[in-house]
Length: 298
Image 1 (tube, rainbow, N blue to C red):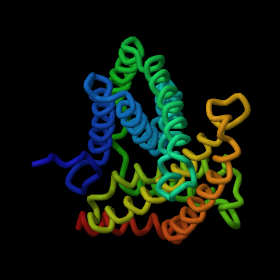
Image 2: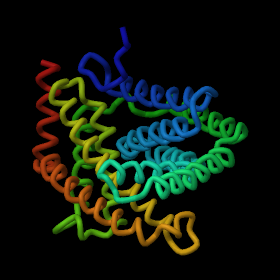
Image 3: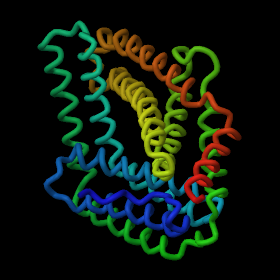
C-alpha cells in the first residue's frame, strides 16, 4: 500500500502537518539528486518540480516565517537556475513535439535536423550543469533547509490562518489574469501568470484531504491550466532559439508562424480554464475552505 502524502488533516496539528510536508518535499528533491540511474532530462524536470513545490510552500508560510522563508525561497530559485539551460533545451524539444502533434508541415529531414540540434544542446547543458560537484552542493543546501524546518515557529498556526494565505495566493493568480483576449497578451504576462498558477496548484495539494473528490478535481483543473501555460512558455523558448545566430536560426521562417499559431491556441484554452478555476471571489473561496475544515473537525 502506498503511504499517504503528508497534507493538512483535521486529526493532525496544522504546524506538525506543515513540517511533514516540508520534509517530504526536501526528501523527494534529495532522492532525485542521489539517483544516478535517472536520466539527465528526468532529473532536471523532477528536481525543478520539487523546487516549485518547495517555493509554493514557502510563499504560503512567509507571513509566519518572515526572512527565513524569503531566504529559503531565494535559495530554491537559485538551485533551480543551476539547471536552467538543460530545462530550456528540453522545453524546446517538448515544443517541437507539441507542433508535430498538430501535424506541423515540416519535412522528416527538417524535423530530424531540429531534433538533433536541440538534443545536442540538452546533452551539453546537462553535462555542464548537472555535475557531481553541483549535485553535492545542491544536496548540502537541501540538508541545511531540512535543518531549518525543525526550528520553524509554526505550532500556533490555525487553519483559519492557512485558509487566509491560500485565498491570498488564489487572489494573486486571479488578479494577474490578463484583461481581454489572452491571445493578445504579452508572453511575459502569461509567464508570470503561470508562476502564480503553479503556486496555487501546489498549495491546494495541502488541503486535498478535506474533500478528496473535490480537491482532486480542483488540483487537476489547476494542473491543466498550468500545462497550457507551460506549453505556451515552451513555445516561447523555441521561438527564442530561432533568433538570428540562435541554434534554430536556419528554420526561423518555417517555425515562427507555426509557433505563433500554436501559442495562440494554448492561450485561448488557458483563458477558458482560468475563467472556470477563478470564477469564485477570494472571500468565498476562503469561506469554502474554512467550512470544509469545520465540517471535518466536527
